[in-house]
Length: 78
Image (tube, rainbow, N blue to C red; front, side):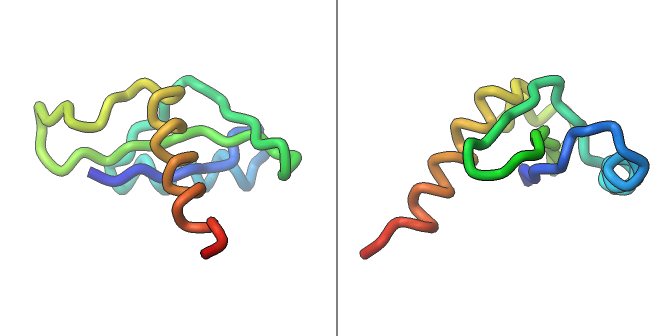
């Protein structure tokens, strides 16, 4: 599956982006995550490759643990 982050404030632009990703099959989670380095809150969206595939949970808080772990690896200094 695929996990993406979208801005979660209910602005017209953000709602349009969320609607676009939903039209592509992504499902929005309920959990809203706030990073300390950016002002806007984010929500995780999930696209499962197969019906019935639960390898990616719909628990947004758990998904953001995976996203934060990815950020830590991607942006660490070598």
